[in-house]
Structure formats: C-alpha cells, structure tokens
Amino acid sequence: QVQLVESGGGLVQAGGSLRLSCAASGDILRIHVMGWYRQAPGKQRELVARITTGGSTNYRDSVKGRFTILRDHAKNTVYLQMNSLKPEDTAVYYCNVQSSNWKEFTDSWGQGTQVTVSS
Image (cartoon, rainbow, N blue to C red; front, side, top):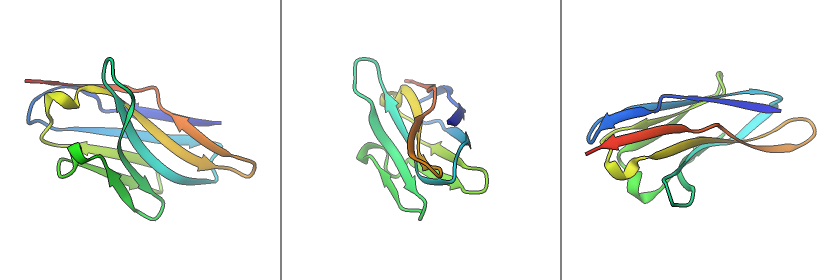
C-alpha cells in the first residue's frame, strides 16, 4: 500500500505564489511517474504537470511558464511551484504517483489540497 501526504494549498491573491508538496511512502520499490492534477467545481479532473523518473516533464498549456514540477528522489517527494497564479487556477489539487513493488503496479492519489486564487 502507498500513502501520499499533500501540503501547501491555501488562499492567495492573483499574481501570488504557492508551493505544493506530496510525499510518498509505503510499499514502494520504484516510482515511475509523479504528477499533479486539479479539479475545479463542475469540471473534470485535469492534468497539471507530471515528471518521470528520468526527469521528463509535461505541463498543460495554461500553466506553462508559471508552474514548475520538481522531484526529490531521495525523499520520494514531488513539488509544484506555482507562480503568477490566476483565479482560473482555483481548484482542488491532487497528487498522483505511479509506482511498483515486487508484485504489482500501483496508481495512487492524494487526498487533495484546496488552492484558491482571489482576483
């Protein structure tokens, strides 16, 4: 079983910054991909950014140049640095970790952290 602990959400004014963290622990042999998704009220969950073991990153177009995803391999932790925040970034942000142990592949989700950007 894999546990994910998220932190760093909150309320910020437009143009401000926040940093989200997600630490993975438990039955992990290898982490393949770590990422962040978000879900706004009435909308589907969408990918924000993801990073592979090799360091390759993907961002949704609307956050490119403003958000940066980083990974600390030693701590099994992924960060999302969010700068120049906009009201449309308001959502619940979820951490996602794809990992494997000796037996199986696991796709794990965090509990979600609220990010609210006021105009």
